[in-house]
Amino acid sequence: MKNIILHIFTLFILVKVQDTSEKSVEYYLNLLQDFMRNASQWQEPTDSRRFFQLVNEQEESIHHGDYDFIIVGAGVAGSVLTNRLTESGKYQVLLLEAGGQENDFTEVPGFASLLIRSDFNWGYKTIPQKNSCLGFKNKQCNYHRGKAIGGSSVINFMVYVRGSKEDFNKWGSENPGWDYQNVLPYFKKSEKSSIDLEESEFHGHDGLLSVENVKYHPDIVQKFLEAVEQRGWKILDYNGKNQNGFSKLQIMTEKGKRCSAGKAFVKPAMKRENLEVLDYALGTKILIKDKKAYGVEFIRNGKKYQATASKEVIISGGTINSPQILMLSGIGPKEHLEELGIPVMQDLPVGQTLHDHQIFPALFFSTNISTNNELSLEDHIRNYLQGFGLLTTASALSGVGFESPRIKSDNPSVEYVFFGAIIDQAAPFLTDFIGMTEENWQAISKPIKGKHSWGIIPILLHPKSKGTLKLKSKNPLDFPLIDSNLFSDKEDDDTEEMLAIIKDILEISKTSAFQSIDSKYLSDPFPACMDSKHLSDDYWKCALRQVTYPILHAVATCRMGPQNDKSAVVDNKLKVYGISGLRVADASVMPFSISSHPTPTVFMIGEKASDLIREEYGDL
Ligand SMILES: Cc1cc2nc3c(=O)[nH]c(=O)nc-3n(C[C@H](O)[C@H](O)[C@H](O)COP(=O)(O)OP(=O)(O)OC[C@H]3O[C@@H](n4cnc5c(N)ncnc54)[C@H](O)[C@@H]3O)c2cc1C
Ligand SMILES: *[C@@H]1O[C@H](CO)[C@@H](O)[C@H](O)[C@H]1NC(C)=O
Ligand SMILES: *[C@@H]1O[C@H](CO)[C@@H](O)[C@H](O)[C@H]1NC(C)=O
Image 1 (cartoon, rainbow, N blue to C red):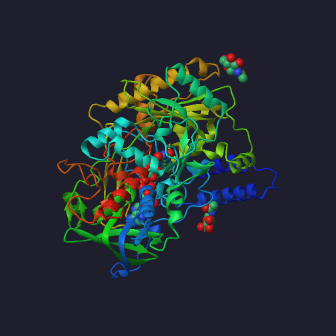
Image 2 (tube, rainbow, N blue to C red):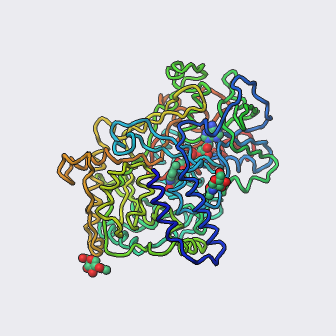
Image 3 (cartoon, rainbow, N blue to C red):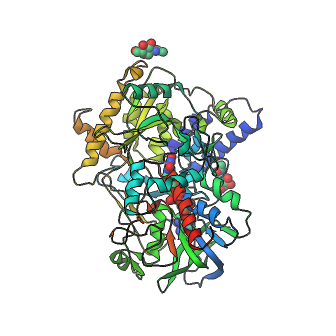
């Protein structure tokens, strides 16, 4: 681990040159140096005891106050709710957030993959896996989650993809109000778009969330777009009428700086007198009496508190933590709760399904053209301060597209994310961020070390495999047990799908566009896959199990569904079945994985939840 940090350090810091005349450039250089120093000392947590201590467990909780609404978690959805529920001034709202404020460092998109090595990350990992992540340390996949006002949108990669019309129509077919026609206005409501290649009736311009075309345009991204056109794909606005096609990345930044949910939604509400925000506060239990939620218990500064909500408690802790706090409060699968000695309030399938997307980050090609990364760090920072360049995107991502290599469909089965840079610059992402072992990283990178390269990272959008989320114990300071369980579907369809995708990407590399820049796949075999003929189907199947990674798009642990659906936790108004005064609003309610990166959809959920609540209490 030290090596990797040193490596990142070298890449960025040792290029440091003489010019310190500009204050702001120097400020960012120092900030980076300071962050890297902290990161090198950062210990991966194994539970929440480092963040929260309870001095005396037996202590009575201190009464903190009475509110109309209490929101637990200032993530993407929680931030929107915080803003909208305090808008009219009618309600007293308490917001509890386990993390703190974002800063100038988290604001730089180009530093995104470094942020996991800080207390902005909860620091979760999956339990050891059987069929995926075998080539990662201890067969576990890192499962990063943001901990801040703004939640995971403070550490995420900011890619803005909404999902297809088909996804929402499927969602809405079981859950009235959630079909495409009904959700589109909420996507537009949150959005402040400044995209040039857009279909305007599909975009909003007066929302709080800034969305723009990526401000990083290396020449090589043009080759990517040419190549996919040569394969018969369209260049289009993938958040417009039709999703199948390619373009430059749409990204949640404002003039090249991260636009988190906290910045967009909480900050403008902070001065409202009817809002109280408590950071570094961990919600530990929903208080329930006679099947009604009436408040929340939480820990802050080593003390236990409680607060009451006369109208509703809204849980917005995200796909990992919302099911955790529900189960800690006795809402969950009866058997599991009884096993842990938690009194059952409501028997519901909380955490029984966890859906995620998966990536195969091993398709990198050498090329003979420059990928635009020769500038010094100072130059990159200077460009960033002007609002463009490498640091205005995460991990050099620049292009993206959607298609279905196996079965033609309006709902794409795969997303291709394009990366172009010197391969060594992918080290922080591949080794530290996703946790690939050194020998596997060497297999991928050694043959193209120091060379300009490009890669397509495929994201399987509708995997059939499903995982689970359980509690380790009834102690709120224990991490929950995350099992992403990739490649577990009975028909092994996910493997077949991934195999078709790998072949499709190899075909893309053979287009005249990519051949004109001498693209070559040169990687060494993964040590664990030496028994199979290199690049044969068997080889790829082995490789898939080595380095396929669940890409942190977890949904569905508190699934929305109709009452007769045995896997449903909340109804179409986000109300928890069987308990009144309690809703869940975040990515966990999404019924299944869709053709998107989840954040835009979670902004939509936050906007729609706010309207549902305000309508119910006559505030609209
Ligand atoms: C590294 C990374 C990269 C990603 N890249 C992208 C991307 O490029 N594009 C995209 O669309 N999506 C991306 N995602 C996914 C996306 O960020 C999440 O799907 C989205 O943030 C989910 O929103 P949420 O409101 O459900 O939860 P979150 O945003 O995770 O927020 C939950 C909040 O609740 C707080 N909380 C939890 N439990 C408690 C408690 N008990 N008490 C108090 N507070 C609590 C947490 O600290 C957190 O702040 C990425 C995620 C990660 C981690
Ligand atoms: C590094 O850690 C110190 C001490 O915790 C903190 O004050 C500082 O803000 C951190 N620096 C960065 C850039 O995160
Ligand atoms: C890159 O390789 C291609 C194909 O071999 C060749 O035509 C081209 O001239 C090369 N370009 C450079 C800059 O070397």
